[in-house]
Image (cartoon, rainbow, N blue to C red):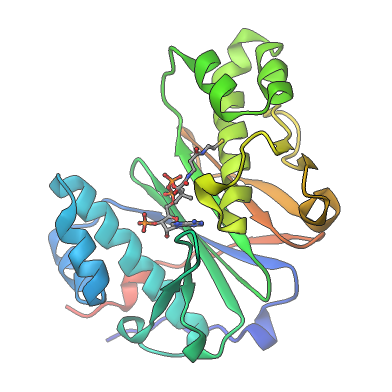
Length: 250
Ligand SMILES: CC(C)(COP(=O)(O)OP(=O)(O)OC[C@H]1O[C@@H](n2cnc3c(N)ncnc32)[C@H](O)[C@@H]1OP(=O)(O)O)[C@@H](O)C(=O)NCCC(=O)NCCS
C-alpha cells in the first residue's frame, strides 16, 4: 500500500496555519469500497441511514477522506482514529490520541473541504452556488438585520455571490465555535460584500469578537463559495495538493 508522507506539526505546522484539503466526491466503486472499510461502527450505521445512494456515497467519501487526511498528522492508521462529539455535535479527535490537532469538515454538491490546524478551533464551510428565488426572505431569517440590509443594497448582479459568501463566512464561524443552531445568527456579523476580504465584523460576545478571530475565503473554483474561520488573530491558509486516496489499497 502506497502511503502519503506523514506531517509532523512540530516541524511543518507553524502556529496559525490551517491546512485545507479539497476533495471531489465523485469516487468510483473501487475507491468507495476502500473508503467504506475505514469507517467505524457509528459512521457505518449513519451511512446506512441515507435515503439515496448519492447521499450515502458523499458521506462515505467525506468521512473516509477525513480519516486519510488526519492519519497524516496522527501517525496512525486511518481506521484507528477515534472521534468524540462536542456538546452540539462538532466532531473532534478523541482525547485518547493526545493531540492538539483540530479539524472541521464541510460538503456541498460534489465538493468536500477538510480544514486541519493545531491548538485552536477551526471551522470550514463550502456552499454550492445555486439559484435562489427567495434570497431576501432567507437572508432576513438567517442573517442579522444589518447584514440583510447591506446585501439588499448591493448591485443586483452581485447578490447571488454575496448571499453565498455571507452564508459560508457565517457558517465557518458557527462551525469553529461548534455551536450549530444554538448560536443566535444575529449575534455576530461578517463582511457581506464578496469583493471585500472575509472578516468577522462584530460579535455580541466580545470574548469571541474580531480581535480573536481570522476569517478567509477559500477559492474552490466556479460554482462554489467557501470560507474558513480560525480562533486566532493570524491565519495562514495552505492548500494541500494531495490525492488522499492514493494511499488506499486495492
Ligand atoms: C453541522 C452544522 C453546524 C453545519 O451543517 P451544514 O452546513 O449543513 O453542513 P456542512 O457540510 O458544512 O458540515 C457538516 C459537517 O460538520 C461537522 N459538524 C457537525 N456538527 C457540527 C458542529 N456543531 N459544529 C461544527 N461542525 C459540525 C460534521 O463533520 C458534519 O459532517 P457530517 O454531516 O458528514 O457528519 C449544522 O448542524 C448547523 O447547525 N448549521 C447551521 C445552519 C444555519 O442555519 N446556518 C445559517 C448560516 S448563515
